[in-house]
Amino acid sequence: MRVLLVEDDAMIGKVVMAGLQDASYAVDWVRDGKAAVHALSSQYYDVVLLDLGLPGKDGLEVLADTRNRRNPVPLLIITARDAVEDRVCGLDAGADDYLLKPFEMCELLARMRAIV
Image 1 (spheres, helix red, strand yellow):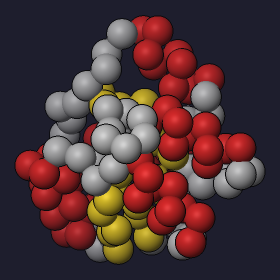
Image 2: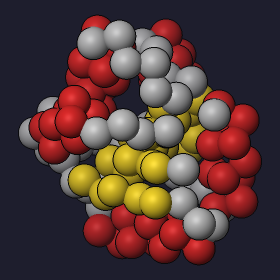
Image 3: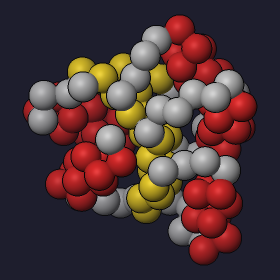
């Protein structure tokens, strides 16, 4: 399964990427919103892991762009934004799930399996 990881924090990105690779996923990692939009328009992904606080283009903008292009890719928001309003906004914008940082890899993998 091919995963697009959109995460600007190098430490988090390295840990998540390693965990996904250990679970036998093929992972492309981009660090800003503009790169995410480009990747989603040029490559097929089975699932997207999307941070919200991104340089270049905010994660919610990436999500809106993805859904406006009618791309049905399963999308899981991974973020530290923990307010109920943020979670509702993300889900209403088209995310399939919303996971708060910090998280355990086993939970991330379970949520990925659930939305795929």
